[in-house]
Length: 509
Image (tube, rainbow, N blue to C red; front, side):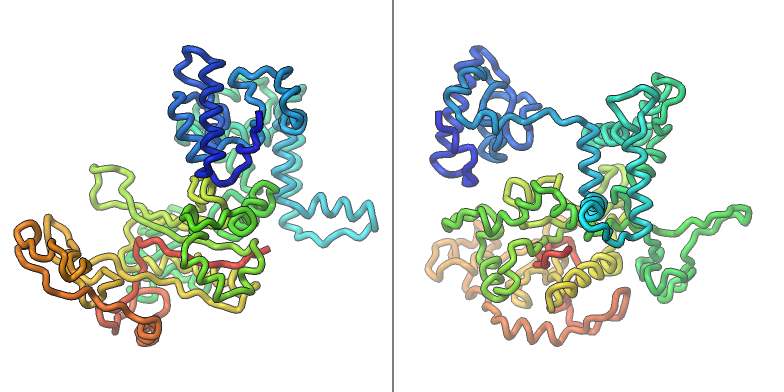
Protein backbone atom coordinates (compact mmCIF):
# COMPACT_ATOMS: atom_id res chain seq x y z
CA UNK A 1 0.00 0.00 0.00
CA UNK A 2 1.37 3.40 -1.02
CA UNK A 3 1.73 5.54 2.09
CA UNK A 4 3.51 8.55 0.67
CA UNK A 5 0.49 10.62 1.71
CA UNK A 6 1.93 10.66 5.24
CA UNK A 7 4.69 12.98 4.00
CA UNK A 8 2.24 15.38 2.34
CA UNK A 9 2.43 18.75 4.18
CA UNK A 10 -0.99 19.76 2.85
CA UNK A 11 -3.38 18.05 5.25
CA UNK A 12 -6.39 19.33 3.32
CA UNK A 13 -5.35 17.55 0.13
CA UNK A 14 -7.58 14.74 -1.13
CA UNK A 15 -4.63 12.36 -1.08
CA UNK A 16 -4.05 13.02 2.62
CA UNK A 17 -7.72 12.78 3.61
CA UNK A 18 -8.12 9.53 1.64
CA UNK A 19 -5.05 8.19 3.39
CA UNK A 20 -6.57 8.92 6.79
CA UNK A 21 -9.71 7.02 5.78
CA UNK A 22 -7.53 4.07 4.72
CA UNK A 23 -5.74 4.15 8.07
CA UNK A 24 -9.01 4.28 10.05
CA UNK A 25 -10.38 1.36 8.03
CA UNK A 26 -7.12 -0.54 8.61
CA UNK A 27 -7.31 0.09 12.37
CA UNK A 28 -10.96 -1.04 12.55
CA UNK A 29 -10.18 -4.20 10.57
CA UNK A 30 -7.17 -5.19 12.68
CA UNK A 31 -8.69 -4.18 16.03
CA UNK A 32 -12.25 -5.55 15.86
CA UNK A 33 -14.47 -4.38 18.69
CA UNK A 34 -11.89 -1.89 20.00
CA UNK A 35 -13.28 1.49 21.05
CA UNK A 36 -9.89 3.12 21.57
CA UNK A 37 -6.61 2.85 19.67
CA UNK A 38 -3.21 4.50 19.85
CA UNK A 39 -3.21 7.92 18.20
CA UNK A 40 -0.29 8.29 15.73
CA UNK A 41 -0.61 12.05 15.36
CA UNK A 42 2.45 14.24 15.95
CA UNK A 43 1.16 15.36 19.33
CA UNK A 44 0.03 12.03 20.81
CA UNK A 45 3.01 10.18 19.23
CA UNK A 46 1.39 6.72 19.64
CA UNK A 47 1.57 7.08 23.44
CA UNK A 48 -2.03 8.18 24.10
CA UNK A 49 -5.20 6.17 23.45
CA UNK A 50 -8.16 7.89 21.78
CA UNK A 51 -11.46 6.86 20.23
CA UNK A 52 -11.20 6.01 16.54
CA UNK A 53 -13.21 9.12 15.65
CA UNK A 54 -10.88 11.36 17.68
CA UNK A 55 -7.85 9.74 16.07
CA UNK A 56 -9.14 10.77 12.65
CA UNK A 57 -9.69 14.31 13.90
CA UNK A 58 -6.17 14.45 15.41
CA UNK A 59 -4.59 13.27 12.17
CA UNK A 60 -6.24 16.10 10.26
CA UNK A 61 -5.38 18.70 12.86
CA UNK A 62 -1.87 17.62 13.88
CA UNK A 63 -0.69 15.37 11.05
CA UNK A 64 0.63 11.81 11.30
CA UNK A 65 4.13 10.97 12.51
CA UNK A 66 6.16 11.13 9.30
CA UNK A 67 8.19 8.01 10.15
CA UNK A 68 5.15 5.87 11.01
CA UNK A 69 4.80 4.15 7.65
CA UNK A 70 4.59 0.66 9.19
CA UNK A 71 1.47 0.48 11.31
CA UNK A 72 2.77 -2.24 13.62
CA UNK A 73 1.11 -0.67 16.69
CA UNK A 74 -2.24 -1.00 14.95
CA UNK A 75 -2.00 -4.63 13.90
CA UNK A 76 0.34 -4.67 10.90
CA UNK A 77 2.79 -7.56 10.87
CA UNK A 78 6.41 -6.63 10.23
CA UNK A 79 6.95 -9.63 7.92
CA UNK A 80 4.06 -8.54 5.73
CA UNK A 81 5.17 -4.94 5.81
CA UNK A 82 8.66 -5.79 4.60
CA UNK A 83 7.29 -7.21 1.37
CA UNK A 84 4.97 -4.25 0.69
CA UNK A 85 7.18 -1.42 1.86
CA UNK A 86 10.75 -1.28 0.65
CA UNK A 87 11.71 1.50 3.02
CA UNK A 88 10.88 -0.43 6.17
CA UNK A 89 14.45 -0.43 7.51
CA UNK A 90 14.87 3.32 7.00
CA UNK A 91 11.67 4.11 8.89
CA UNK A 92 12.29 1.98 11.98
CA UNK A 93 13.42 4.27 14.76
CA UNK A 94 16.25 2.87 16.89
CA UNK A 95 15.94 2.76 20.65
CA UNK A 96 17.97 5.68 21.99
CA UNK A 97 19.55 5.46 25.42
CA UNK A 98 18.42 8.21 27.82
CA UNK A 99 22.03 9.04 28.70
CA UNK A 100 22.85 9.49 25.01
CA UNK A 101 19.89 11.84 24.62
CA UNK A 102 21.14 13.98 27.52
CA UNK A 103 24.59 14.13 25.95
CA UNK A 104 22.98 15.26 22.69
CA UNK A 105 21.23 18.07 24.61
CA UNK A 106 24.56 19.19 26.09
CA UNK A 107 26.17 19.20 22.66
CA UNK A 108 23.27 21.26 21.30
CA UNK A 109 23.64 23.82 24.10
CA UNK A 110 27.45 23.91 23.86
CA UNK A 111 28.26 23.27 20.19
CA UNK A 112 31.76 24.67 20.68
CA UNK A 113 32.76 21.53 22.61
CA UNK A 114 32.44 19.00 19.79
CA UNK A 115 33.66 21.55 17.22
CA UNK A 116 36.70 22.30 19.32
CA UNK A 117 37.60 18.63 19.72
CA UNK A 118 37.30 18.03 15.98
CA UNK A 119 39.54 20.98 15.22
CA UNK A 120 42.13 19.83 17.74
CA UNK A 121 42.31 16.49 15.97
CA UNK A 122 42.80 18.20 12.61
CA UNK A 123 45.07 21.18 13.12
CA UNK A 124 45.63 21.57 16.89
CA UNK A 125 44.18 25.11 16.77
CA UNK A 126 41.25 25.16 19.24
CA UNK A 127 38.41 27.64 18.91
CA UNK A 128 38.45 30.35 21.63
CA UNK A 129 35.90 29.51 24.32
CA UNK A 130 34.35 31.76 26.92
CA UNK A 131 35.61 30.69 30.36
CA UNK A 132 32.20 31.01 32.06
CA UNK A 133 30.53 28.93 29.35
CA UNK A 134 33.21 26.29 29.55
CA UNK A 135 32.81 26.11 33.33
CA UNK A 136 29.07 25.46 32.91
CA UNK A 137 29.84 22.86 30.28
CA UNK A 138 32.26 21.05 32.61
CA UNK A 139 29.72 20.98 35.44
CA UNK A 140 27.00 19.52 33.20
CA UNK A 141 29.44 17.03 31.71
CA UNK A 142 30.46 15.91 35.20
CA UNK A 143 26.82 15.34 36.19
CA UNK A 144 26.17 13.56 32.88
CA UNK A 145 29.04 11.14 33.51
CA UNK A 146 28.48 10.64 37.24
CA UNK A 147 26.47 7.56 38.19
CA UNK A 148 23.30 8.16 40.18
CA UNK A 149 24.70 5.70 42.73
CA UNK A 150 27.69 3.35 42.56
CA UNK A 151 26.99 0.60 40.05
CA UNK A 152 24.03 2.34 38.37
CA UNK A 153 24.42 2.10 34.59
CA UNK A 154 20.93 3.20 33.54
CA UNK A 155 20.92 6.72 34.96
CA UNK A 156 23.47 9.43 35.46
CA UNK A 157 22.78 12.31 37.85
CA UNK A 158 21.83 14.63 34.99
CA UNK A 159 19.69 12.02 33.22
CA UNK A 160 17.72 11.35 36.40
CA UNK A 161 17.12 15.06 37.01
CA UNK A 162 16.02 15.67 33.41
CA UNK A 163 13.60 12.70 33.52
CA UNK A 164 12.08 13.78 36.85
CA UNK A 165 11.74 17.44 35.85
CA UNK A 166 10.14 16.39 32.57
CA UNK A 167 7.53 14.38 34.49
CA UNK A 168 6.93 17.29 36.87
CA UNK A 169 6.13 19.65 34.00
CA UNK A 170 4.18 17.10 31.95
CA UNK A 171 1.85 16.18 34.80
CA UNK A 172 1.73 19.67 36.37
CA UNK A 173 3.22 18.69 39.68
CA UNK A 174 3.66 21.42 42.27
CA UNK A 175 7.06 22.17 43.76
CA UNK A 176 5.89 20.92 47.16
CA UNK A 177 4.69 17.63 45.68
CA UNK A 178 7.90 17.26 43.69
CA UNK A 179 10.00 17.83 46.82
CA UNK A 180 8.07 15.10 48.64
CA UNK A 181 8.54 12.46 45.96
CA UNK A 182 12.16 13.47 45.40
CA UNK A 183 12.78 12.88 49.10
CA UNK A 184 11.04 9.50 48.91
CA UNK A 185 13.15 8.44 45.89
CA UNK A 186 16.32 9.58 47.62
CA UNK A 187 15.51 7.41 50.66
CA UNK A 188 14.71 4.43 48.42
CA UNK A 189 18.08 4.59 46.67
CA UNK A 190 21.37 3.51 48.27
CA UNK A 191 22.62 5.93 50.88
CA UNK A 192 25.53 7.11 48.72
CA UNK A 193 23.27 8.27 45.86
CA UNK A 194 23.74 11.70 44.27
CA UNK A 195 20.07 12.60 43.68
CA UNK A 196 19.26 16.22 44.65
CA UNK A 197 17.25 16.60 47.83
CA UNK A 198 14.67 19.10 46.51
CA UNK A 199 13.46 21.05 43.51
CA UNK A 200 15.74 24.00 44.21
CA UNK A 201 18.86 21.84 44.07
CA UNK A 202 17.66 20.16 40.87
CA UNK A 203 17.12 23.56 39.24
CA UNK A 204 20.67 24.60 40.08
CA UNK A 205 21.98 21.62 38.12
CA UNK A 206 19.83 22.50 35.09
CA UNK A 207 20.69 26.21 35.11
CA UNK A 208 23.66 25.45 32.90
CA UNK A 209 21.26 24.43 30.14
CA UNK A 210 19.96 27.98 29.97
CA UNK A 211 16.61 27.28 31.59
CA UNK A 212 16.77 30.09 34.13
CA UNK A 213 15.32 33.60 34.22
CA UNK A 214 16.32 37.06 35.37
CA UNK A 215 14.66 38.85 38.27
CA UNK A 216 14.29 42.60 37.76
CA UNK A 217 13.03 44.84 40.56
CA UNK A 218 10.25 47.29 39.72
CA UNK A 219 8.81 50.39 41.36
CA UNK A 220 5.83 49.79 43.61
CA UNK A 221 3.76 52.18 41.47
CA UNK A 222 4.93 50.79 38.09
CA UNK A 223 6.96 53.94 37.37
CA UNK A 224 10.26 52.34 36.33
CA UNK A 225 12.46 49.27 36.46
CA UNK A 226 15.64 49.15 38.48
CA UNK A 227 17.41 47.97 35.37
CA UNK A 228 20.65 48.76 33.52
CA UNK A 229 21.53 52.39 34.30
CA UNK A 230 19.07 52.38 37.25
CA UNK A 231 20.10 49.04 38.69
CA UNK A 232 21.97 50.53 41.65
CA UNK A 233 19.20 52.92 42.77
CA UNK A 234 17.27 52.38 46.00
CA UNK A 235 14.39 54.80 45.31
CA UNK A 236 12.20 55.50 42.30
CA UNK A 237 13.25 58.52 40.24
CA UNK A 238 9.61 59.48 39.58
CA UNK A 239 7.61 58.88 42.78
CA UNK A 240 10.51 58.53 45.27
CA UNK A 241 9.07 55.25 46.59
CA UNK A 242 11.57 52.91 48.19
CA UNK A 243 12.77 49.98 46.13
CA UNK A 244 12.63 47.62 49.13
CA UNK A 245 10.07 46.80 51.77
CA UNK A 246 10.45 47.92 55.35
CA UNK A 247 11.91 45.03 57.36
CA UNK A 248 13.54 44.57 60.73
CA UNK A 249 17.09 45.86 61.08
CA UNK A 250 18.31 42.37 61.95
CA UNK A 251 17.40 41.05 58.50
CA UNK A 252 20.45 40.70 56.28
CA UNK A 253 18.66 40.51 52.92
CA UNK A 254 16.39 43.18 51.49
CA UNK A 255 12.95 42.31 50.08
CA UNK A 256 11.99 44.20 46.90
CA UNK A 257 8.58 45.84 46.64
CA UNK A 258 7.88 44.29 43.25
CA UNK A 259 9.71 41.82 41.01
CA UNK A 260 9.38 41.09 37.30
CA UNK A 261 10.67 37.87 35.74
CA UNK A 262 12.40 38.17 32.39
CA UNK A 263 13.31 35.16 30.26
CA UNK A 264 15.89 36.12 27.58
CA UNK A 265 14.76 35.52 24.02
CA UNK A 266 18.06 35.11 22.17
CA UNK A 267 19.11 31.74 23.66
CA UNK A 268 15.73 30.20 22.81
CA UNK A 269 15.85 31.46 19.25
CA UNK A 270 19.32 29.95 18.99
CA UNK A 271 17.99 26.64 20.28
CA UNK A 272 15.58 26.46 17.36
CA UNK A 273 18.58 26.31 15.05
CA UNK A 274 20.68 24.02 17.24
CA UNK A 275 18.33 21.06 16.74
CA UNK A 276 18.31 19.53 13.25
CA UNK A 277 14.55 18.97 13.46
CA UNK A 278 13.49 22.51 14.33
CA UNK A 279 16.20 24.08 12.14
CA UNK A 280 14.52 22.49 9.13
CA UNK A 281 11.06 23.55 10.31
CA UNK A 282 12.23 27.16 10.70
CA UNK A 283 12.54 27.28 6.89
CA UNK A 284 9.16 25.60 6.29
CA UNK A 285 7.35 28.87 5.46
CA UNK A 286 9.44 29.30 2.32
CA UNK A 287 10.72 25.84 1.36
CA UNK A 288 7.79 23.50 2.07
CA UNK A 289 4.67 25.67 2.26
CA UNK A 290 2.09 24.98 -0.44
CA UNK A 291 1.08 28.29 -2.05
CA UNK A 292 -2.41 27.57 -3.41
CA UNK A 293 -4.28 30.69 -2.20
CA UNK A 294 -5.67 28.81 0.82
CA UNK A 295 -5.16 30.49 4.20
CA UNK A 296 -3.49 27.96 6.51
CA UNK A 297 -0.60 29.96 7.92
CA UNK A 298 0.31 33.65 8.38
CA UNK A 299 2.67 33.25 5.40
CA UNK A 300 -0.45 32.81 3.23
CA UNK A 301 -1.75 36.23 4.29
CA UNK A 302 -1.42 39.41 2.29
CA UNK A 303 0.44 41.22 5.11
CA UNK A 304 3.24 38.64 5.02
CA UNK A 305 3.45 38.76 1.22
CA UNK A 306 3.50 42.55 1.19
CA UNK A 307 6.36 42.55 3.67
CA UNK A 308 8.25 40.11 1.43
CA UNK A 309 7.76 42.40 -1.56
CA UNK A 310 8.86 45.44 0.42
CA UNK A 311 12.00 43.85 1.89
CA UNK A 312 13.35 41.34 -0.65
CA UNK A 313 16.77 41.35 1.05
CA UNK A 314 15.19 40.12 4.26
CA UNK A 315 13.05 37.57 2.45
CA UNK A 316 16.01 36.07 0.57
CA UNK A 317 17.10 34.11 3.65
CA UNK A 318 14.30 31.81 4.89
CA UNK A 319 16.06 31.50 8.27
CA UNK A 320 15.19 35.09 9.18
CA UNK A 321 12.90 34.89 12.20
CA UNK A 322 9.36 36.24 12.14
CA UNK A 323 7.81 36.65 15.56
CA UNK A 324 4.43 37.50 17.03
CA UNK A 325 4.09 39.07 20.44
CA UNK A 326 0.91 38.56 22.47
CA UNK A 327 -0.16 39.24 26.04
CA UNK A 328 -3.27 39.23 28.17
CA UNK A 329 -4.01 39.15 31.87
CA UNK A 330 -5.72 36.40 33.84
CA UNK A 331 -6.60 35.76 37.46
CA UNK A 332 -4.82 32.61 38.65
CA UNK A 333 -7.02 32.50 41.75
CA UNK A 334 -10.36 32.49 39.93
CA UNK A 335 -13.09 34.48 41.61
CA UNK A 336 -11.38 34.42 44.99
CA UNK A 337 -9.33 37.53 44.27
CA UNK A 338 -10.80 39.99 41.81
CA UNK A 339 -8.02 42.54 42.39
CA UNK A 340 -5.13 40.37 41.21
CA UNK A 341 -4.09 39.43 37.69
CA UNK A 342 -0.97 37.93 36.15
CA UNK A 343 0.29 39.09 32.76
CA UNK A 344 2.56 36.73 30.83
CA UNK A 345 4.00 37.97 27.53
CA UNK A 346 4.55 35.31 24.87
CA UNK A 347 6.49 35.23 21.63
CA UNK A 348 5.49 32.87 18.80
CA UNK A 349 7.94 31.95 16.00
CA UNK A 350 5.88 32.06 12.81
CA UNK A 351 8.60 30.42 10.72
CA UNK A 352 7.37 27.04 11.97
CA UNK A 353 4.62 25.11 10.18
CA UNK A 354 1.03 25.66 11.36
CA UNK A 355 0.93 22.41 13.36
CA UNK A 356 3.83 23.68 15.49
CA UNK A 357 3.92 27.48 15.60
CA UNK A 358 0.93 27.75 17.96
CA UNK A 359 1.70 24.71 20.13
CA UNK A 360 2.71 25.28 23.73
CA UNK A 361 6.10 23.62 23.14
CA UNK A 362 7.08 26.57 20.95
CA UNK A 363 5.41 29.37 22.92
CA UNK A 364 8.22 31.40 24.44
CA UNK A 365 7.24 33.28 27.57
CA UNK A 366 9.58 36.28 27.79
CA UNK A 367 8.07 38.42 30.56
CA UNK A 368 5.99 37.53 33.63
CA UNK A 369 4.27 40.44 35.37
CA UNK A 370 2.64 39.48 38.64
CA UNK A 371 -0.07 42.16 38.64
CA UNK A 372 -2.04 44.28 36.18
CA UNK A 373 0.43 46.86 34.79
CA UNK A 374 -2.36 48.99 33.32
CA UNK A 375 -1.08 51.76 31.06
CA UNK A 376 2.47 51.24 32.35
CA UNK A 377 3.06 47.95 30.56
CA UNK A 378 5.75 49.67 28.46
CA UNK A 379 7.83 49.90 31.64
CA UNK A 380 7.90 46.12 31.97
CA UNK A 381 8.51 45.58 28.27
CA UNK A 382 11.76 47.51 28.23
CA UNK A 383 14.09 44.44 28.52
CA UNK A 384 12.24 42.70 25.71
CA UNK A 385 12.25 45.78 23.48
CA UNK A 386 15.98 46.24 24.11
CA UNK A 387 16.61 42.65 23.09
CA UNK A 388 14.44 42.94 19.99
CA UNK A 389 16.30 46.08 18.93
CA UNK A 390 19.58 44.32 19.48
CA UNK A 391 18.42 41.48 17.26
CA UNK A 392 17.50 43.96 14.54
CA UNK A 393 20.75 45.89 14.59
CA UNK A 394 22.93 42.77 14.39
CA UNK A 395 21.96 41.99 10.82
CA UNK A 396 19.33 44.30 9.41
CA UNK A 397 19.50 48.10 9.30
CA UNK A 398 15.91 48.68 10.40
CA UNK A 399 14.14 49.37 13.66
CA UNK A 400 10.66 48.17 14.44
CA UNK A 401 8.38 50.51 16.37
CA UNK A 402 6.47 48.25 18.70
CA UNK A 403 3.08 49.84 19.30
CA UNK A 404 -0.64 49.08 19.36
CA UNK A 405 -3.85 51.05 19.29
CA UNK A 406 -5.59 51.09 22.65
CA UNK A 407 -8.20 48.35 22.96
CA UNK A 408 -9.86 49.89 25.99
CA UNK A 409 -12.31 52.74 26.33
CA UNK A 410 -14.75 54.43 23.98
CA UNK A 411 -12.21 55.13 21.19
CA UNK A 412 -10.73 51.64 20.86
CA UNK A 413 -11.53 50.85 17.21
CA UNK A 414 -8.39 51.39 15.06
CA UNK A 415 -10.50 51.46 11.85
CA UNK A 416 -13.26 53.91 12.79
CA UNK A 417 -10.93 56.04 14.96
CA UNK A 418 -12.77 59.27 15.98
CA UNK A 419 -15.84 58.17 14.03
CA UNK A 420 -16.44 55.13 16.24
CA UNK A 421 -19.90 54.39 17.68
CA UNK A 422 -19.61 53.19 21.28
CA UNK A 423 -21.67 53.22 24.45
CA UNK A 424 -22.00 51.81 27.94
CA UNK A 425 -24.08 48.66 28.16
CA UNK A 426 -24.31 45.80 30.69
CA UNK A 427 -21.40 47.14 32.72
CA UNK A 428 -18.92 47.49 29.85
CA UNK A 429 -18.13 49.54 26.77
CA UNK A 430 -19.82 48.14 23.65
CA UNK A 431 -19.11 49.07 20.03
CA UNK A 432 -22.23 49.57 17.92
CA UNK A 433 -23.13 50.94 14.51
CA UNK A 434 -22.15 47.88 12.50
CA UNK A 435 -25.05 48.48 10.09
CA UNK A 436 -23.04 51.37 8.66
CA UNK A 437 -20.95 48.80 6.80
CA UNK A 438 -23.94 47.29 5.00
CA UNK A 439 -24.90 48.30 1.44
CA UNK A 440 -26.94 51.49 1.26
CA UNK A 441 -30.14 49.67 0.29
CA UNK A 442 -29.81 46.79 2.78
CA UNK A 443 -33.05 46.03 4.60
CA UNK A 444 -31.43 45.93 8.02
CA UNK A 445 -30.68 49.65 7.81
CA UNK A 446 -34.43 50.30 8.17
CA UNK A 447 -34.99 47.92 11.10
CA UNK A 448 -34.93 50.12 14.15
CA UNK A 449 -36.72 47.95 16.72
CA UNK A 450 -34.47 44.96 16.12
CA UNK A 451 -31.36 47.07 16.85
CA UNK A 452 -30.88 50.35 18.75
CA UNK A 453 -34.24 51.94 17.93
CA UNK A 454 -32.91 54.10 15.11
CA UNK A 455 -32.67 53.79 11.37
CA UNK A 456 -29.09 53.75 10.12
CA UNK A 457 -28.49 56.51 7.55
CA UNK A 458 -24.75 57.01 8.00
CA UNK A 459 -22.07 55.99 5.54
CA UNK A 460 -19.32 53.58 6.49
CA UNK A 461 -16.30 55.22 8.20
CA UNK A 462 -13.65 56.55 5.87
CA UNK A 463 -10.48 54.55 5.24
CA UNK A 464 -7.24 56.26 6.20
CA UNK A 465 -4.35 56.22 3.77
CA UNK A 466 -0.86 55.15 4.74
CA UNK A 467 0.42 58.72 4.44
CA UNK A 468 -2.28 59.98 6.79
CA UNK A 469 -1.49 57.31 9.39
CA UNK A 470 2.23 58.07 9.10
CA UNK A 471 1.53 61.77 9.58
CA UNK A 472 -0.43 60.98 12.76
CA UNK A 473 2.43 58.83 14.03
CA UNK A 474 4.88 61.67 13.43
CA UNK A 475 2.72 63.92 15.61
CA UNK A 476 2.92 61.55 18.58
CA UNK A 477 5.24 62.31 21.46
CA UNK A 478 6.98 59.00 22.15
CA UNK A 479 8.32 59.56 25.63
CA UNK A 480 10.96 57.34 27.26
CA UNK A 481 9.93 54.30 29.25
CA UNK A 482 7.97 55.16 32.36
CA UNK A 483 5.13 57.37 33.49
CA UNK A 484 4.96 60.78 31.82
CA UNK A 485 2.32 63.42 31.17
CA UNK A 486 0.72 62.71 27.80
CA UNK A 487 0.29 65.58 25.36
CA UNK A 488 -1.55 63.46 22.80
CA UNK A 489 -5.24 63.56 22.02
CA UNK A 490 -6.99 60.54 23.58
CA UNK A 491 -8.28 59.40 20.20
CA UNK A 492 -4.78 59.07 18.74
CA UNK A 493 -2.90 57.94 21.81
CA UNK A 494 -1.05 54.67 21.23
CA UNK A 495 -0.16 52.60 24.27
CA UNK A 496 0.72 49.06 25.22
CA UNK A 497 -2.32 46.83 25.57
CA UNK A 498 -3.21 43.15 25.56
CA UNK A 499 -3.71 43.33 21.80
CA UNK A 500 -1.51 40.73 20.01
CA UNK A 501 1.38 42.32 18.17
CA UNK A 502 3.34 41.16 15.13
CA UNK A 503 7.06 41.50 14.50
CA UNK A 504 9.38 40.68 11.65
CA UNK A 505 12.81 39.79 12.98
CA UNK A 506 15.94 38.64 11.14
CA UNK A 507 17.74 35.39 11.82
CA UNK A 508 20.23 35.82 14.61
CA UNK A 509 23.24 33.64 15.28
